Length: 310
Image 1 (cartoon, rainbow, N blue to C red):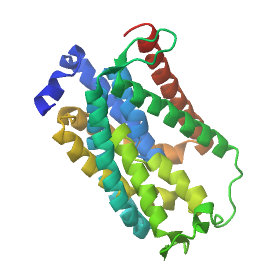
Image 2 (image 1 turned 90 degrees about the horizontal axis):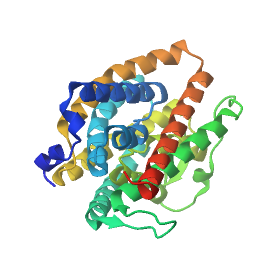
Image 3 (image 1 turned 30 degrees about the vertical axis):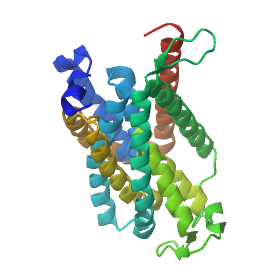
């Protein structure tokens, strides 16, 4: 699929100005999430592009990663000024992340060429392989995020520096020391984490911050802001490489990416403002509700296509 084919694959509604205004509004929502919670927002953006805007899954993944480049650059500038994050750890994950996103892109390409598959249960209808597996992936991911955040809200606020997490006890040499936190980590383990997150980016269009941040907080023992800042380098690297890889397959629509980026630029400012204006727990509840509703909507859409037809 080339760039012209990607444009032709858009729904008929894409010829209406309202469709593009709603697309910018989605970018605004994603920007609010990014500004408030320090994550890229791809875990919400990509499934909603498919679900609400009827964009083919492959194009949604590639275009979502393209939009994430702007978000990650802005985040990198912000955290550099604040002198936050373990830059050493972020750079150590980049090599694995680049390999992972390249492999994930190839997996999605193979799924796109597989055609339709049939589950063989309850008279399920044939469905494109990429739509089936991506929808299942989003449901599992969004359910996990909602469950983790619900559990996190019940945790007591830590007093002082957070304790060292279980990842610091993995003694797989060579070991390296993080200069800001003083934690010792296995270099091969760090590379494998980058590889796994890169793979998710390539297949699902999820840059990985929403997974990496809690992993660093509870697995390593970082403060939340330090963890969010640490993952920005990986976010930027996987977004750039993933965009290039998907663009070569014709799965990036530049007009959609720019429209989303315009909305998310304003949304990020709103999200930062909400951080100081609203109670954090209330914002977290709203965020969990949004994630849960998106997961349920993706699950319902998949069930409808399987058993009732599109």
